[in-house]
Length: 502
Image 1: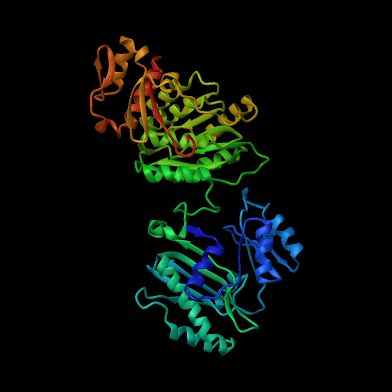
Image 2 (image 1 turned 90 degrees about the vertical axis):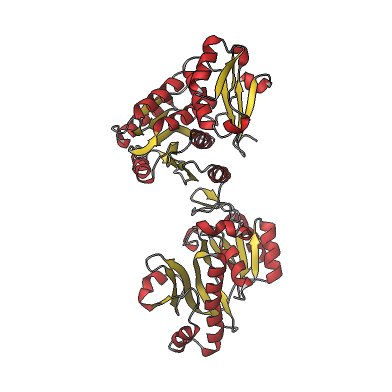
């Protein structure tokens, strides 16, 4: 579920007539002071982070002076939540709160309908007062049963003068949820004030991942649930996934313990990846990212995933391990990983468990291609347990020493000069070094390229149209890697990654 920040949710609430505190979002101390000057002191300042319990970590401040606003803004904007920086704070009027209510709407998958939770005593700790929460099923056509809400209010201790406004707010929550295809909308608390207002003092909202494309106005970068605003690498990875639907590719950066050595993680299959992450964590490492390439991913997709993982700084190693019984051809992953490792001239040890179909071939490809790299690359099979290879990985990391700097991608000279035989493919270009294509190299290109190439005047050239070869990136990378293994590196598939290779 894609999340919205508190201020974004409140903007949607205000659009349907639910009153929200006066204020605005600030990204600097100057902006915070300007907002406070406009709405007047005192103010409440809250970090915008996708978490509960912000007050407990010092992420909420009650400020009564202009100097205090600047000081708190400087403090809040230097905070990190799970190692991810706080970049926005919400500055709002301090409300004269009288009573607090709790309103939450979510989709109940079991009953296949929206359900509203309503407590006429809200605020923090609502989880501990379950008995006081009313559970109301919502008919998707009829919407909120306003008469039922009025009966509940009549039985409560709330001042009758607020009842109409509360009913309107509850109806507004339903309107927002339906209009934006939200999975959940929570207002906690919805408050009454001593000056006669009903205000949404806080708001949490999530949008159905599969509906995000219909709501560009919400400005959601990545249609999936994260515990932090998307990082630049997550945006790059998500764009790749959206452009290439051959298998899955999931990439998310994780908070890390700065006192532990940091590794790049590459899994295949959810359950096996979780087990493998436990194994590498138990070996004493901090996992910089979670990555999953499964569902029979293309060679190109695995290659791009590996490139993104390796673009993170401070890594001491690359650990790949998944289910071990995945029904996908593991040599596809081996080709993609090998290409990425070679281009990046891998300087940190890598241990890759390639369990599944054709695992023996996959391990042979990976180790053959990577045997001359600066770092050790080892491949393993499904019978090698994640815990065992995690210990081997730990040994290799200890032998290698400190973390390597960010590795730079290298491209063969014949692809840079622009003199090689070449042709475009989807997302890149293929180069063939005719200058060094002797009879043996030409035979290899035509052999490993299948029906894509033919010999012409002693050199390999396309045997099909550019249109027919445009989507053959996986076959072309396989040809490149097989020629490389055979000592004839005359093929180069240049697949650019927007955001990394710009």
